[in-house]
Image (cartoon, helix red, strand yellow):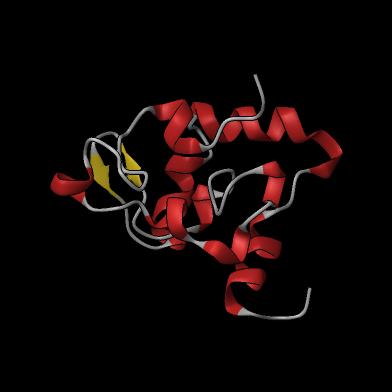
Length: 103
């Protein structure tokens, strides 16, 4: 099996067409195209920690600055860091990409 996106790993059902979309809406990570391909994911599926509005512990999270402490202990985040090794892209780089800044 290839590398999983967050919605596949967590089975949250917020991906487009997912089972929880009517309840919680589409996950911003699943539709964030500016991070498509990062860590070999679809959209921001393997960089969800920098996208506001993702879900953690059954609750929709806020902005990066308020949620990143929780993300650092997330099993999916740890998996990405381990899988990517030296190719792991740090949050500051990903945030710059989201802002349209030159990296």
